[in-house]
Length: 601
Image (cartoon, rainbow, N blue to C red; front, side, top):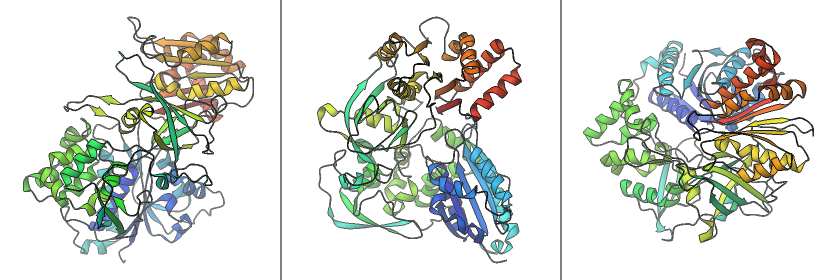
């Protein structure tokens, strides 16, 4: 049998599945296979019937939802009209990337594999279920899964055994060639929002989207935690008038951050690049030129707005660095990090202390200095947009959009504090010093609230998890909906009690019942789940007799499960049902949309 052409399709929300798919593609290239790597929505799914070998790499988002770039594929694949044997000529494998701290762990990969089998596809290996929570990260599953996959492919296609693969330290051709131009950019760095052609200010253009974000003017950037509190939390206020942006309570805003000027300069120095030089980009394969890059593009723009140099690099980063290394000492260390035996060392060096790509390059200065610019787009992934729950309602604040932002800053064993790229970039913007424009767009979120006047809603939102519930309460009160309960938790009543005066006004108006848990204001810690248990009788009445809806938002670690357990306890204690019956009631509420959650890690 002739060697097949491999198709690798990925569904990725944050770039991890894309990175893994590209890794599969590189392994295929090293085996001298013809290979295409494409996003699922960038592929004509009707062509699957003519494919012979496909790997699907997909993540799971939200509450078991497919990533944005595979939703069209998802809808097509689950059409009831598709014949049962339509994929009978297809050999394939499914690799899922997930996080076991979420209830629907790798739900998309499991469901995809099941559907492909229904349509007649042959599965070469069992579905791979990689887990971010594993001590060694997702590679603990990905590595053996890929080994099994290639072993199976060699059995199916013995001709591949006759081909000598490329060594791991032999460079593959880059995906792009950078052609540098003689003229340079203006020496003045671009200010936020002064590039309207790239972010779209045409008044006749359609609603803001990822490909055409709206340059929203920042009105204010106000700290809402006490100055002595360890956590810096901001309320950001944006003017979106004239944007045609519409949103409802529960929706999210997406913002793509940019790297700091210090990081841009440091990166350029390490790689001996002139930030003001300009280039054009030519693809060397089927890859498309990234639409977000202007033509021509400056090195500054590429590093500042496109390359995610502040991210913790994945193993593929080290694999690609190996091929560029000319120093024996640096190459040996990089090879060690890439080997199965060096997995623990790579975790200790990079993942656990959250070392960034820029810091890794600084640790391997000889390799960094030898890196060809053509390699940059393969080596460093694109900066991904961040999602934030919208904390305001257009019915109360027309033409405005507000975000409650926790500024991410923490320490590891490394000398420099670790910082979140987007939150620190946004926190650094000061509209009082001049106009600040932030490109953004909105998409539908996972929370939906009842349309009728009388259905009570119970909202459990500790910390910044209260953001979507502020939007919901603004919206509901403006519509005359008064059956609202809010369980809010934070560390201290005096330091991080977000929107305190607003809740007080709603409570005084008889439109809100507020229950608070200040975990550090007494000797024994008190959390929102404790308050839910205390209000068991009230909650049983609202859920069983008044058909209320129950919502949870916040950190995914322990709180959502603890709150769910507390609600189950309320059903058992006040309803007199067994634990199993209470769990079935919760499952039924989830299926009908009466129990919803929006959590993040």
